[in-house]
Structures are given as C-alpha cells and as structure tokens.
Image (cartoon, rainbow, N blue to C red):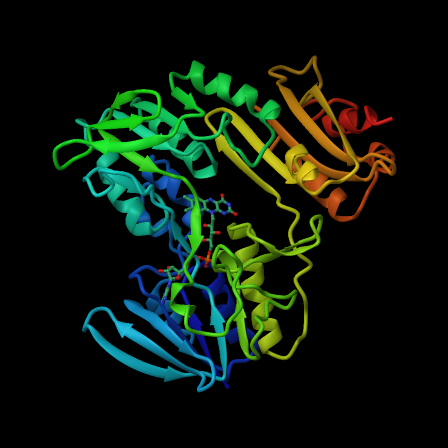
Length: 444
Ligand SMILES: Cc1cc2nc3c(=O)[nH]c(=O)nc-3n(C[C@H](O)[C@H](O)[C@H](O)COP(=O)(O)OP(=O)(O)OC[C@H]3O[C@@H](n4cnc5c(N)ncnc54)[C@H](O)[C@@H]3O)c2cc1C
C-alpha cells in the first residue's frame, strides 16, 4: 500500500510515524512545501523570547531520522493539485522549479493553516511579521534582538498575540497591543479576561481595545500604524489575527470543504471521498458540546491525536476520534489563562438553556505562603446542572486544574457530582475545598 501525506509537521508526521510503527511494509511518502519538518510550533513564542535558545530544541525529528525509519520525505515540494479520479497529485519541486506527478492508494491531507494578513494599505512594507512557521520565528527572533527595535505593535489579542506580548515585555521593550474586539481573547467571555487586561496594563503594555488597523505607513519599513482612532509610532509590527486553512490546492477537486476552506471530516477523519483523510489545522473537527462536524479549532493537541487515528484506520484498526470540547490554556507573564467547554457567549449562540456562576477562590490553603486568587466562571445547563464550560485565570493553579474540569465535562458530569469528587487536598496545592468545587458548590 502506498500512502501519500501532504504536509510534514504535527498531523502529517504523527500519522507517518504511527503508520510506520503499525505497518512496517507501507510505502509512505511525505510532500512538504517548506524546509522544516516536525517542529513544535507551540514552542516558538519561547524561542523568539530566547527562553528556548536553540532552534534544534523545537525539532522533534529531522529529515534524516525520518528517512532512516523508511519514511520518504520530500521538502520544498508543494502539492498544487489533487486528481481524485486518477488518484494522482501534481507537485511543484520548488528547488528545481519543475512539476512532478505521483499516485497514491491512500491520501492524508495535513497542510495546516497560514496566518491571515491584514489587507490594508502599506501591508507590503518591511518590518511587518507573523508567527506561524519556523521561518517566521527565525526572522522575528533576529529582529527582536536588534537594539534599534524598541516599540513593537502586536495586532490581535488572542493566544499568539498574548504569548508574543509576554516575549516583548520580558525583553524590556515596549509592547503596544491592538485588538479589534472590545476585549482580549475574544474566544473567552469579557468578564473573566478583565484581570488579564489590568495585569498587562500594569506591566506597561499599551492596550487599545475596540480599535481597528486601517493602514501601515513608513518609507520602505513600517514606522507608523494608522487605526480608526489614532496614529501610533512603531519600530516593528507582529500580526496575530488568526489562521486560515491551507487548502487552496483542492479548489478543483470534489473534496468537501467548510465555508472557511477547512476540509470536512467524519469521526474517523475521512473526507467525503474514499481513501482520502484530513487532519490538523486544514480540517474541521467534531465538537462534542456543539454536536457539530464543522467546528474549526486549530490546535496542536488534537492535530497530533488525529494524525495517529488516521494511521490506525489506514492500518485496518477502525477507531474514531470522539471530538473536542475546546480545551486550551496559555501563559501570559505571571498569569495562567485556561478554558474548556462553552463560554457564556458560545452557549448563548447555541441557544441553550444555561446559567453561569463566577467565583474567586484561593489556589491553595490561605495560611500557606503565597496563595493567589483564581477567578473561575462556570457555564452549566439550567435544569440538569450538567457542566458545560469553565474559564479560569490566575497566577497559580489554573493551567493544569482546567484538565480536571475538561474530564468532568467530557464525562457529562453535573455540578453536584463534581462537588463530591474525591479530589486531593494538601495546603501547598489547594484549599480543603478545591477552587473548582467552590465554584460548583455555588450552583444550587
Ligand atoms: C506561535 C504558535 C503557538 C501555538 N501554541 C499552541 C499551543 O500552545 N497549544 C496548541 O494546542 N496549539 C498551539 N498552536 C497550534 C499548533 O501549532 C497547530 O495546531 C499545529 O501545528 C497544526 O499542525 P498541522 O500539522 O495541522 O499544521 P502545520 O503545523 O501548519 O503544518 C502543515 C504543513 O503543511 C505544509 N503545507 C501546506 N500546504 C502544502 C502543500 N500544498 N504542499 C505541501 N506542503 C504543504 C506547510 O508548509 C506546513 O509545514 C500554536 C501555533 C502557533 C503558530
């Protein structure tokens, strides 16, 4: 059996490695349009801030290591067309500028996503960066180490925006954060994000919420940003306004895609066409709480799982991916930010009968040194008290605690059952009532 994988990072290479382990005799060919393979994109914010010094630390496996394992990897090869009738790909060899053709028995689309760019005047000026690929991270790291670069604007206050702001603040440079929505992290509810906005302002970040970038200005290099409210002077810009699936090469095919271009897959990660699978940032994912096959949640956590599940299915073990509930967490300076399940906004959009509670509780016993408050917001079904979502922010005890709630929500637990869970207690780690149980106790 010959399997072709398009895209050589999280979803693609986890599928390749797992399939090789499961079925040694499978011929596996990977086409990757870039030069880098199998790298941890999630570590890039810490690479640009120099917390991670060596680029090599981000690389899980090199091309040579894959070749030695019998996985035939071609970098600098961009798939430009898929003929699903003939099971044939057209591929552009970017080094030699030639077109080659290859055929498959099974195809895995793992082409990820690319950074959305602001379509504004001045967008081609130098000094406007994104952070999506390792190549982006290399050039950004170099620019951030330049002493003449002192004032850096970050456009977009989502995950990547906040992680990049942290790098800028820690490097002692000035961060200007511009977000179109009236709050940071628009995926979260505004009230739970308030402590983060306050903390960033105290850390010296100039925050402009509800403000839209209209143009970049400068001679050759960007030196000013014009928004709908003011003109800001800057030395560098980092755009972090989201990603769009890299699936343009499927335009002429019959492979079904969602409105945003993401390939639609079922629970076995199969597309609408036989023998073609898709996973990771280029595909939709089943959302358990929304009961939707067209959710777009571009995160590494399930890109890796999905790659392995495709490998199992191709190897003849029909297993399914149960779906996501939207769990995520991140660090921003001394704060941890975390969410699982549905926010109030999301529950509203789904027209659910729900209520919320919000509490502030200590992360550890109050008498133990350095206890910090944890802000928790729960969303739950009004009549059954089934837990639907949890958002948390705080300086300690947030990032990993969210996984307790993710487990409970995925198991369909209600508030009372959660309140009676036998969670561990010791003063350095939690109060006698865990903050999450303090929150579920509020649901009466
Ligand atoms: C800065 C940053 C921080 C992040 N932090 C986190 C985090 O903390 N937690 C988390 O869960 N997720 C995080 N993510 C998201 C996570 O990195 C992605 O979800 C994950 O990398 C997706 O993997 P993928 O294999 O689907 O796509 P990608 O990693 O994008 O890989 C796809 C590959 O396909 C190649 N390709 C595209 N088109 C073609 C073509 N036509 N032919 C050949 N090759 C092609 C691309 O060059 C690319 O190398 C972060 C992302 C970024 C950018």
